[in-house]
Image (cartoon, rainbow, N blue to C red; front, top):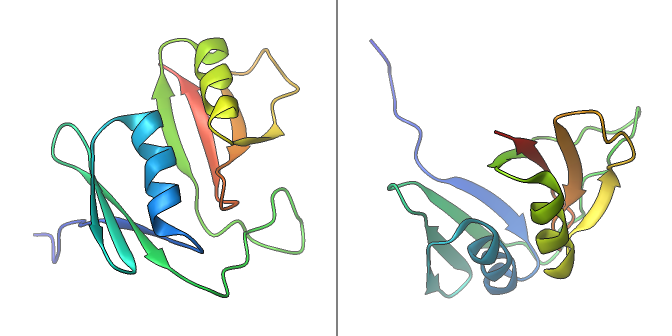
Length: 119
């Protein structure tokens, strides 16, 4: 028997509203603002949350001497189309050179790594 259920995944960032807006454009959903905390209610019942962290330091990727801590895998139908969309929203490419793979790695506007993964 499980001891717990997974609740929100929470990202520390300097501007919770801005980062929630980025992910709302990528994933859909509804942004609910609560001062230094913002929830993104996603279709299907999941939530992604964003917490103000004024001293936020983005993870380094790739970096053999530093950990990325975690990353999000986002499943997409068309990698090229999704890539154009996230770049237009402010994502930065981290590792997209190998076009033969079924995924590409980016950083969101606050520097968190995420992957677009072909479905």
